[in-house]
Image 1: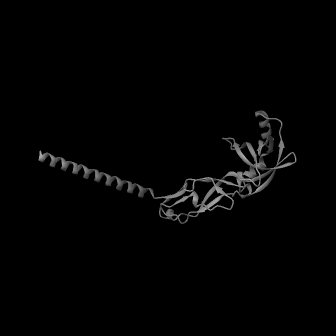
Image 2: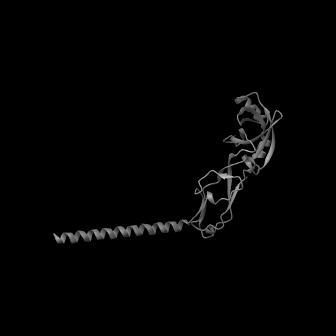
Image 3: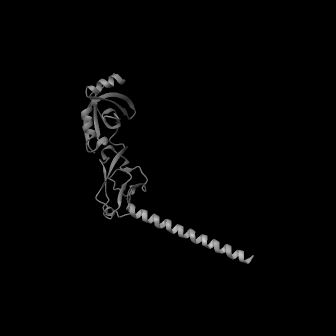
Length: 220
């Protein structure tokens, strides 16, 4: 996992107006909390934090936050953005310990071209990230899984993912990650055949019922 240093300044002013002034000055309001210590309101340089969050590890980058000369190991969490502009408006920094496992959301990337896609199928990905538990330094930047061997009907489950040492997945092993679906035309044809088969079976049943009724009437 990547690790960076970010200098923070303790802030004594809280509320909407001071927060707006901080943002205009290029500073992002934030809070540092966790490990049983008191929460500390701070501000951090927004450009530096944006560069960190756009890095390879994203929000799972291990950040050494320097506050009042004290270095604190943290992870950025509860990242809030303006819904229209996409700009950062607030972030929480959670204190962590290097020797204690934490939970994190890790991106999941599928690589290669599934064999079933060359046959006309469609690769449908259900999970784009997975939740893991690991020590901060062991959290992977991303998971990659090669789907080249998947034919139509083939599936990938969480249990198929390769895990680095010290990483535990917080999912059921049979949870679906991706599958190669049959071409729509084939599905429609199969559905039509199924419907025709059902219709034929119903007609045969109706004919049998009618025959039994006629035979029963003759006996009377």
